[in-house]
Length: 116
Image (cartoon, rainbow, N blue to C red; front, side, top):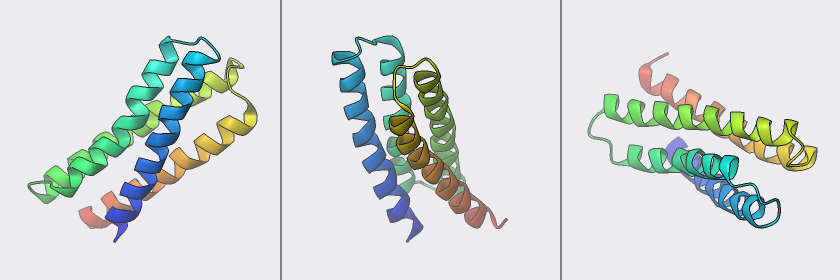
């Protein structure tokens, strides 16, 4: 149940990140951070997708922990984009809220699977 929720959230977020990347590249002429956030922001969902067919509980948790690391990195790039004035407060808040939700949901799934 939680798996499908986190999968949907992360895929929707990846699509937003792809649009952000296009905007940063085409409108803002920002090529370095845009590639970094594109990689980390889409990797969250890729790792969650991989976790669906994990070979064991340990493998499942490992994939989700990688997704968490990518989420944290994405949050960092979003903060840099905002604090440098490349994206607006509104753009930042919306994307930051999404990634926080994904991170929190992923932590909850890991804790439940780990018996914490």
